[in-house]
Length: 288
Image (cartoon, rainbow, N blue to C red):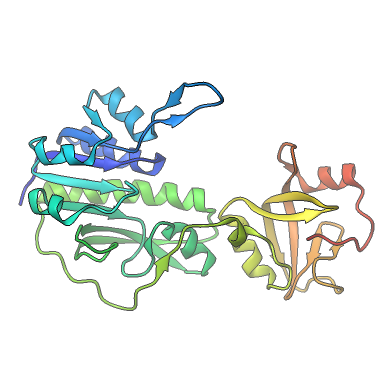
């Protein structure tokens, strides 16, 4: 199958580069389907999704109704972070492929980038896969392995977007061959909740540093929330009760966590030493 006329389904920032890459490669995108516009502020103004804004810049028709892909004349649907399962009856009308940001079957689901970092995975990647009735269970046409390194989730997602966009264009340009069944143990990438981002000081510093890397990590100080945007594990850490702050290092269940960038409640992000200079934490005062 060598599809040239596509329907594109996507919503967030991560789905913009693949859309633009397909358009630049000369594919005819007959329709973009995306999530609803989001309310902005207290008025009635609404912001388009990132994918809708990109499609409008490219001059591509946009719909918020998934059923419209059945009648848009496309030969293939391309799904990238659309946010909804595709009904089986629609797949009977239009076959679809999905660009997924993990090495399937590891990290099926909503938050594969964050879960790979939290788990301490050394490698992740991108897959172009067939869409079926299950959640990220279809056969895989192609994949590319990416080293995780010490990237934040934002930086890793950016690298995956670049690699995935190129892989998607390559696969569709060459033509869809045979999708190979997924092999190995599957894991599910649950959405990241506030509880996942809490820095629980009984955990080892290396694990806590990974929580910080996915963005939005938090603890409390003197009853107010303190976000931690930059931190690093140190060995050996200071001694004392878990959560105790000595200088810029917090005692953890294994080693210490050095605070680099923080954000006090209702304040801007700042370097940890600037925060300490203003907050004047007592020697041995505790976080959390």
